[in-house]
Length: 131
Image 1 (cartoon, rainbow, N blue to C red):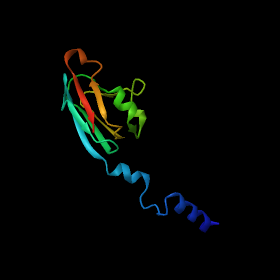
Image 2: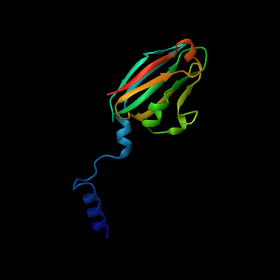
Image 3: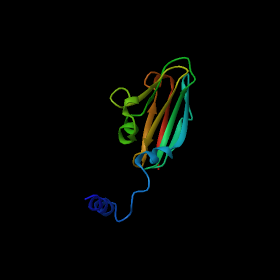
Image 4: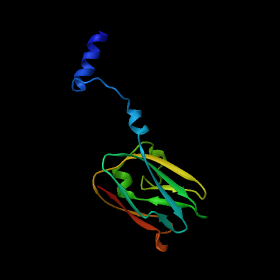
């Protein structure tokens, strides 16, 4: 019975045995850091590669709470722990002096808007490009 199950798994995997767990994919995440300062993102132009795994590191070095608001990007991306998302999955809230790390797989190619929902009026905006 166990031999039959093993054959079924090998057959489902195209004849190749599984060599890495799903967790290993997240372990190889490329870190991309964005610093939030009153009232700007550094950098304000982000580039991701479609299908690649990232650890998006958001550092709030400002005196106020900031949001990484990117509705199209965050909804299209595969986010490992969606509990870090706020406002219906459209943004990530980062308190002053705190850092939030989000593991994600970049979505399909495209341009996505980026703002801080609380400070977009003051120019805290940027762009996300996925190529």
